Image (tube, rainbow, N blue to C red; front, side, top):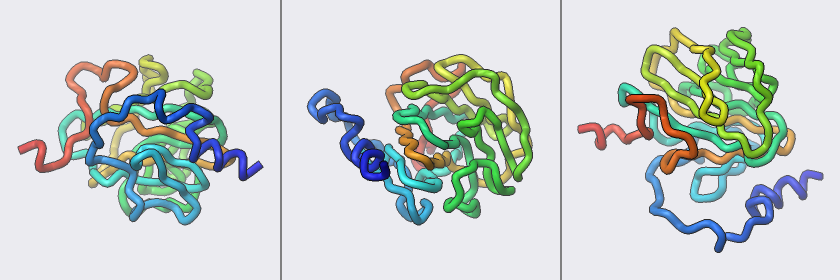
Length: 194
């Protein structure tokens, strides 16, 4: 079973590389220095599988940031924001004081507290959008707002993806599938803001 999931992670679920045109590499990727011990990062730093969490290599510094995540393969997963102090060897996002995440069970968590329950069922192929403006963290499923804002986030935070039980997530940082909310844009490196 594990071999099948890892093969899917490496092979891209059977899609040939020639079907996806190569694009310019984005300097923002999942960070191999800030990931769980059993996490695998592939596809130029934009795909995560294995067991645990991974942060990006860039914090959200601009006033209105947006990114998306495609549920490439189901399993246990979580998507959200975290500081570099979060535990990346766990698979439940929002399980500590350093992370805020929408989990595959439909619950948005922070510090082991259930902040919101999402009624929508997320399936393979769905796109989770995440917007953050240093006041509110919001989630979108296939372009539709979940109307479940998370507030009170402090400090330097990074996008974080957690996976387990065969889940494969693809981080989308440019060429979004759904338009970002008004005023929000892709994550920029700090020097890009000057």
